Image 1: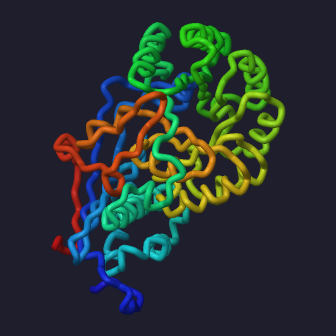
Image 2 (image 1 turned 135 degrees about the vertical axis):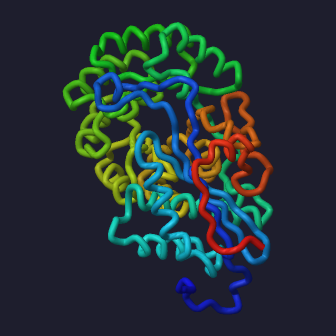
Image 3 (image 1 turned 180 degrees about the horizontal axis):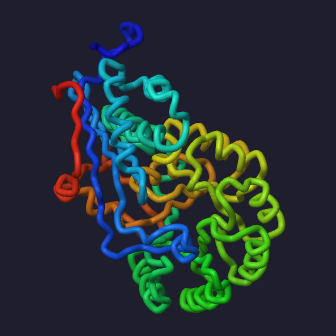
Length: 386
């Protein structure tokens, strides 16, 4: 059966003819633990599952995008993507918002957030990559960049499974590599252990290096209030996820009571969920994740709302995508540096003087490596490649 395609006029110059979906499992060299592991809510993380989408058109243009899942969910994303992929065949790749809506309706009974829209995100990001490549522009420039580089901070060196001395060594190495800030995990059952660890890191870095902490939603409201007051003396750039991700009112009360900025948002899976934070003034810094909220189309909607509310931006994870989106945000943002994904791609991002730089490569500027192909668990193709 030929998929339904809405009428298109002479302005349609190209059509989607081919899609390749790949389920890729990235193994982590060391099991990773944050506060969710120490409180018994999760097991250490040993791998990250990716859904890659490659899209091609009749005119020979191609794009690539991805979504991901930590712990459970990767096979589900791949399965949902397989079901909805035929809906793209024959569509104009420029009509990205229209295609996003079509894909949502293709799986409307499973909702407009969570696993279903995270699967859609991989298609959406691939189409934006294709559009920028066809224009011969980096994605940031296609969107309209406010800057060619973005402040960056490292997270991967500060997890709770890492001994404090190693955290200090990791921080030194990150700064030597040109990264501008350091984030460490907190939220241990014993808050005094967090304070000892943080004291060591701040003394090691000095007062001038931006320092952030992340509690990964493991404090209740009274604990967050007590810890927030105790953390004021460290001059933190922000306290991240001090409370449950959906506790907008709790975050609002905490943010109003502290001098230290409060950041949250990474675990939310739609623009609507982020709007709850924004309308309650629940975050000084919002941390959306484009693959989690449905892709770049949805991220741009959220960015406009955040700008309207005069909120700062620090997108979560996936720096290969978020560098471009942060570069296009009006207020000076931050991008999170993780080196975990580097084996998946042939290219590397340039970092110097505390900033991550947008390259001149068109689109996202990434291509899949042979290692990524070797880690591929399943492949599904729709249509025919020109």
